[in-house]
Image (tube, rainbow, N blue to C red; front, side, top):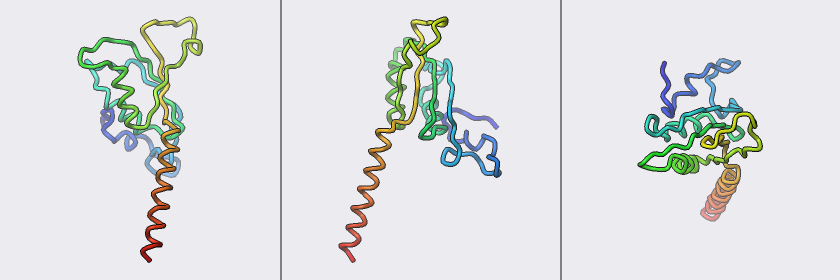
Length: 143
């Protein structure tokens, strides 16, 4: 079978776990995803890449991407990637150059670390809890 970024079939394509169940991010933790030279909007749309990262990422998954700064006349690829990532509750951070190998510097290439935004996840959990409490209190009043 052929997988296209972000077509929501990647987890179906992965091998089964030890018990024969299809892998998914609810039961299987993917620790690290590595992506290089994939943010090239003239060739590849950015949204399917974000969709694939989102599909594979659990709460503890870290994705490392190399991003080469390139001009694209329709939008800024870096800003668009970050915007789409935020919509999926993904946080994008630039890895500081002091943490990279000093023998391989490149002024036009950044390494990005993408992970779930835990602050937003905590806010969502708190909101969900508050909503469940409101529903519960409302149901008690109606009874």
